[in-house]
Length: 143
Length: 143
DNA sequence: TTGACAAATGCAACTGAGTTGCGTTATTAT
DNA sequence: ATAATAACGCAACTCAGTTGCATTTGTCAA
Image (cartoon, rainbow over all chains, first blue to last red; front, side, top):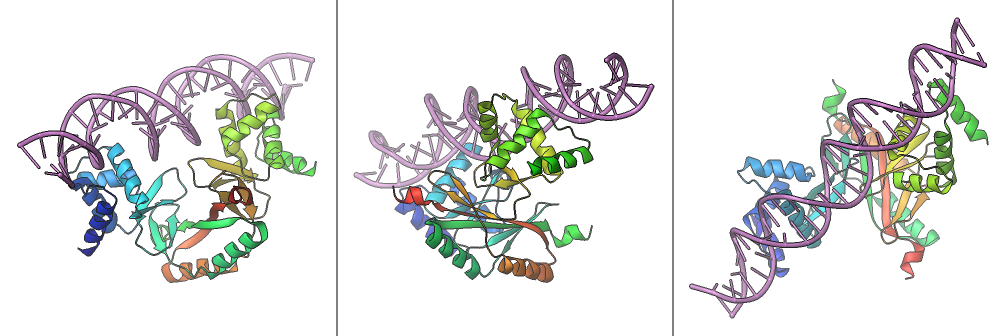
């Protein structure tokens, strides 16, 4: 798998070690297109016979974040969710019933125009934005 | 103040009592255009000689939410923020340096178009969205 | 006006996500 | 192989928010 090589290179460049846990952590994020919480990650690791301490996961996630391998998302509840950063910038559809999360791409021209306007008019420099949609997924609507 | 009458009517209609705490709570939210956390609210109440228990505030906020007087916002940290709901739908600029929050209005046509598209193409019905901008406010940029 | 009933409040103890300090284990470079 | 250092696990902590229960307060009907 090619992405593994890339990650290995990035880790080495930052004097970080590629341990079994980190490797598996990235695999788990890679295999799930939806963003995962730390609890999700711990469960998925346990399923492949890797019982890991949550502190370890939090620290690993922070490091991977720092070097740009993963990104954090907030989906409206109290938790943080993590996903691989090499994916294109996108937004999320969150089902209020079953909590399932889907990715969604959209044209952001209007958003960028707004960011420029705010920057020009108020002197507030926008570095990033978060846009999440909440509603009912197909499955939950038909119940 | 006219809005107080409206709130009184709404509370009565829902068999809720207009207590000193609730009245002051609404006043506090009314006097602050930026959304407030529970800690913010407790501080502001203490400043007007009202030492209230946090549980009381949480419960009052939930009730006022249920009857549509206030709304909840998430601004990227772990807390929930509350603001009066009669304000028009708007978004927030959050300064990553000083954490100050400004309101911002924008044309949402593009967003609504996107919501319709998602609904048509994927059968996901969007009920609401949250859009927050993160960056540096004027003051923090010049530091 | 008063008294009964329901709503509101306060308190203490709890939950759940995330963090910190520190001693132990594993990886890497020499 | 081994010393240096990064990674890990554990226990104890923080902080936002919640719950159960006893006490107080507001409301409405008699």
